[in-house]
Image 1 (spheres, rainbow, N blue to C red):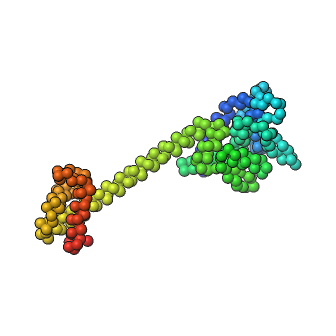
Image 2 (image 1 turned 135 degrees about the vertical axis):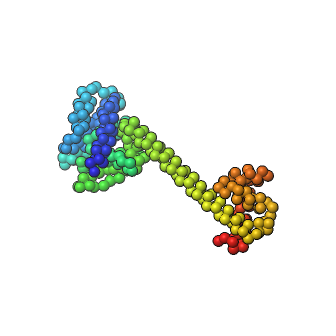
Image 3 (image 1 turned 45 degrees about the horizontal axis):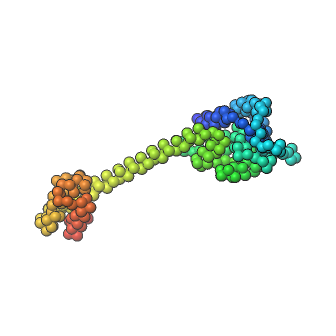
Amino acid sequence: MRSGNKRSSEFSSEIKRQLLTAEIKNECCANSFLTGVRVFSRQRKNQFSDAVSEYCAKLQKRRHKGYFDDGKPKGILVSADADVLCPVSSGRVCPHCVPNFVRAVFLVCGRASKTEKELHLEFVLPNTESGEFLFSAMRDAGIAMKKTTRRGEQLLYCKRAETVEDMLSYIGAVSVSFELMNDAIVKEIRRSANRQKNCDTKNVIKAVDAAARQSEAIKAIIAHGELNELSASLRETALLRLENPIEPLEVLAELHGDGISKSGVYHRLNKIVSYAVKKGYIN
């Protein structure tokens, strides 16, 4: 358990360190980020609480470029209803506002874990209203999150590798997302190699078993003095198989020297085995 928790903590930390290096240029996006921090911050502090506070302080001190020129509200705003904070859209949100908002939310109440078998990313929400806003924002961005409750807390989460990768790219943790994609590619290559290896092994075993049965049939026919009952072409193939008991069909076809194909050798050997079975020499 401790090892798993450590891995989870390191993975989340890697993501959050990258998110804190992003630069926000527009006033609306800065407001959206600050709204995410304000609405979703939890009372419990974590190792990134001070870093997030410093990041927010720098945003508030800077003079940001305005995305809109009409002086109307910009980005995502905070609404308070019965002392419950909830984000609301100003109706004038630029394409970068929501990603910055979600980036802030992950910094203050998100976490992720990675094991050999599973990826997991989740948001622990302060209230249902804010959770619905975040859920809708993710749905509109084409990122399918799921809802659940754990120990009385509302959560949004995703476990599919592709969804986690999309989420990380969306909020700006691009290099972490690329690392996950590369890991997935390497795993698929290994799985493909193992499948091919297993397939090759099965084919070899199958070919060896077939060659052994063919030799058994030919020896039985010879033992009963009926080799000459076979046609000249079948006798030739039978003798070549006895002389080369483990060679593949391709090699037998070359040894014939009369232009016969691998398929032709296969059919001849099948006829020989069928003859022995019909005579009751083998099962």
